[in-house]
Image (cartoon, rainbow, N blue to C red; front, side, top):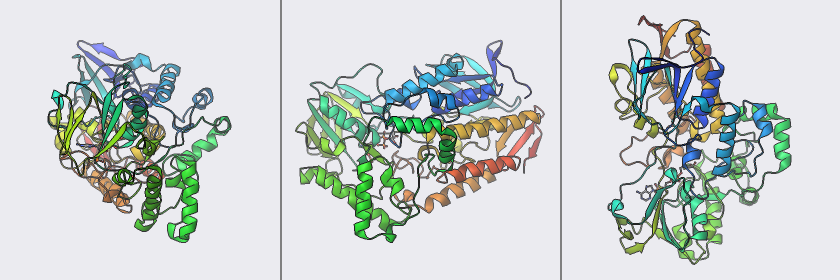
Length: 553
Ligand code: NA7
């Protein structure tokens, strides 16, 4: 490689490095390792007080990996890391995942290039020098050829603007910005607003400790049992001894997990056969019902209805009070919102110290100094827990608002559509790469594995530029249009777009509606490899520092 320095260097008030990475979570950590291994000088910035991204912030009670977890929710590139880490549970807790990431940071000696408690105030592209200038909250300025945005898909906390919220005299926390200090619920009247994954994970834990818990639910969701348990040592052993094979299976799987998929369709079985299969998979827990039932679960309304009916019957059987059970009854295509896994959620509503408020019948009018007022009356509270989610997938990039060509900000570019190419690059924003950006598989893929594969693509692209003396690479608007079409076409083959969810942006008032996840799984990685193999089809390049633009394809 040419033109690289091992260490950032300083010239006056400006520090120079090859790449600035924003975000020290799962994506940013691997990007730092990989680019540094390539010989680049790299600086990482993160506003949090520790590494880990989402796993640093989301330390609310009950926070766990809410998908098929151990031992596969991890970096896959290093057999050594796999060999030396023991996962304790099938669905590792936030604490366990953070411990693992801390271990990775130490083993790869990442910390020396990570600056924490540092928000980025400004990031702008300087066309004359083909570099990004990044300014931190402390006023430090860094110049880098490449800007890698590993800012997280679920990082921009969504805090609805309830009237009177600032007047509340008690404690108030957002699950995605949970305090570092322990929070005690003992003897307190706690209100949880929101029943997505975070609320559903937190509710059973809070109910056990609080004097009283009021759950404010707007949209009931389907939750299926996580059946978290100690990880079988044999599974860990198997993964360690056969990591190459396991990794190959992960790479080939639609969501990056080494599990078998089914090709069987719902209509191929009788109602009795379906019931028996659903029961077996319900008992297994985790995402088995989603991946192990029928191949057309997320494409065929009737197959979907049969599983939705099954889960609704489970809720009725679990919740003793039929009126409460009815309030908990979901009504959308199962799996088209982020599928929730729980450890005793519905059972919690059988407790004497838990009340469910159905906000569809009885909406919040205002927050008062002493609690929440809904249409039917006051709910006195000592603590409000907002489990109200995130401006997902695009929100953190928009808050960063990098300025591309002509000083135009991303907020302007993305005012009505989140145009990008391959989920990683944006026209008019040369030399900027996103990890887990809109239009990548991101939240519907094993995220550490996705981050590795995207980062490796970015690394190869950087190498391509350097080997050819190219100063800048940039996606074309036409490539963005084609990519948007592809992402949409894949989504429209499924039931996902038919449901209001944070996948479609419907959870944020005023946000443009767009399904922002590439559903291809392995197809996505094939597509990005093909683009690279064709000399970075869909991109244009500039010679180093001479401003000449030449089409790549
Ligand atoms: P989600 O899944 O977006 O859930 C947010 C919840 O908050 C959901 O129940 C929302 O109801 C509710 N909400 C949002 N705004 C309001 C207002 N204004 N009033 C009442 N209720 C509201 O976020 P999570 O944090 O649970 O999960 C996100 C991911 O984070 C998850 O996949 C995990 O991987 C971690 P709605 O459904 O919009 O009616």
